[in-house]
Length: 221
Image (cartoon, rainbow, N blue to C red; front, side, top):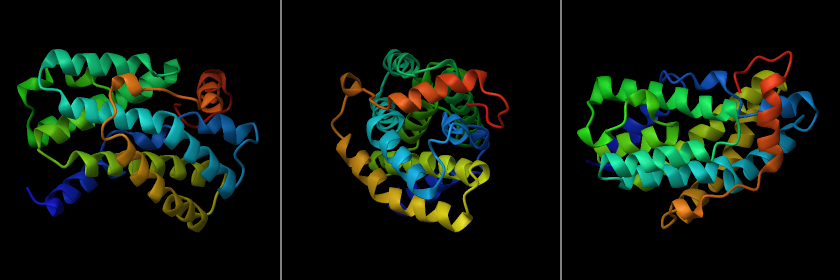
């Protein structure tokens, strides 16, 4: 398949209109909005750069690549169980499971599913589901990883635009500044394995935990 076909397919999969419910999740950012840690375009950009490079973004990229490389149900299940193990809170687990299940079910219904999936669609974590689907459709894995990270960042910027509040133009400026980081992180994880999973974004993880009891709140995570 051509790179243009890959781009169009991934643009559909990772579009806000694809029914995974991404708009309902802030990945703990809502806590940072309420406690005054993230209050501007600059503080949002700083927060997201760290999450992408040193936390969930990088880890999701590694998990996506590992799922893409899986050739048996057992291998895919190991990747999926690892994805659950590195999720730092109950809400993070639900966030990745619910989005992953919705993504896998939709792509299977439209594009079909290969038997290598093995695991029920509702059980796949989001980056695992995307990596597995990309492998089944023979999409470029480097492009998939980059666009996945960009969509992840875009969803969190959208949450900030709604909740900080942050202007639409400011939000797009932040997203544009994150593009190079998405490309760099995707490139740096080309040879990474599950042994390279790590996170040092402690404030983000703590924010995700605190969100479980946050009141009032508008996001599910």
